[in-house]
Amino acid sequence: MGRKEEIVQLQNIGVKVPSFFRCPISLDVMKSPVSLCTGITYDRSSIRRWLDSGNNTCPATMQPLPSTDLVPNLTLQRLISFWSASADADTAALVPTHPAADLLRDLSSSLNPAPSLRRLADFLLDADNEDFDKNRLIASGSCATTLTSVVNENASKIEILEAGVRVLALILTAEFIEESNKKLVVSSLVSNLDSTVSSLLSLLKEGKNPDSRVDAARVLDSVLTSFPDSRIPISEKPDLIPELIRLIGSTDEGIGKEKMDRSAIETGLSCLVAISGVRRARALMVKKGVVLAAKKILTADVSMAPATAAEKALKLLEVASGLPEGRSAICESAEDFMGAILGRMMKVGRKGTEAAVMVLWSVCHLFRDQRAVEAVMATNGGVTKILLLMQSDCSPAVRHMSGDLLKDFRVNSKSCIAGYDTKTTHIMPF
Image 1 (spheres, rainbow, N blue to C red):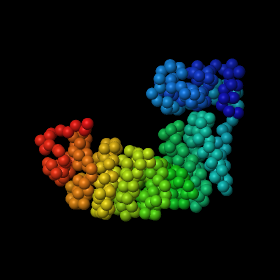
Image 2: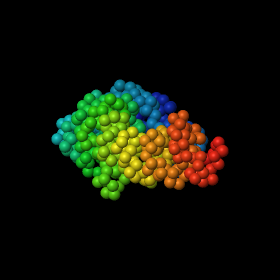
Image 3: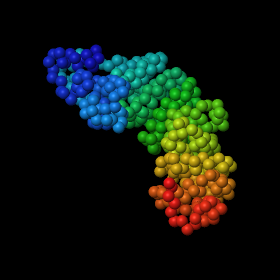
Image 4: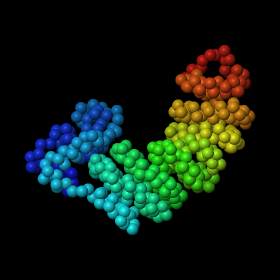
């Protein structure tokens, strides 16, 4: 019996339904309450039909909607579930255990848990299933440990591993899963960190499709983000860094052979940036081709490598520029790298801009590589961009580094910037 049938039974026996449990559109008790930007909550299926019909107003207030994002109202979801369970003791007995709970029991005993894992993933993806039920399932004591056990015990069985990591990735990235439940799952994964990373690495190496490799990286990224202390042991795992670089399609073997994937780029970069905080990992990242990886992303189409990806790529170049091997890799193709950095420098967030300036300052000013200096000066509008950046609302550190760079490029010489008046104290960008 579904929740809707259960609610109908409660209503039929005379149980009063609180008015704010009802959807303003259907007037039925909500199964999956979501809120619009106006603050009004509707049942997901009802408001989705309203919006899909071409309406762009709030049904209750008729206000125009600047955003049609639907935010799960988990508090109301819990209240409805508690009410339906406690409204009448006899009626509450009609509520069965959700079939998804049976899937968890099957996982630990089945010789091939892959089918159960796929059904569990379908349950999490099904919008008709209540967010409360999904969170309640994950919050159960056995869910996190069962999933961790299945994944870690089947590292060599790719079909099972793909299905298990898919469920973990859904839990850790879905907006409707509460943060406390995500932390519960990550804690379980970290409790046996070596086995967890080995399983994820196995999937990164041998995953049958790009999506499964992205899922593995997403789970890894959640662990790196939630437990910073895990970064050192994770970075020391053999072959992990090369596989992450391969994920973003940038190793020598991958160039031209593996199509760049936006999800893979974003997730792989997040993992690499987290690991780059480990000093001993930086040299290996440079050796395995992270510099070439970053350049490829910076020069990719914006639709494939948006500002968020470019910002992370610039951060990796900043890390690389702190090493002799990294600077050498950058300056060997100085014209390409300087053009890529200057091309994205003004089109990313504040952190990305700071990283870009840091790379330029490191190779051009601190270590005075003439190849890099000449490449910047030869880039169309390159020095002008640094000048404009210096006069913008940048941080004191960026302003100082920009000033050093402009001195190195001898901006007071009219030969560097044609038509520039050396007495000008401020240049408007428009």
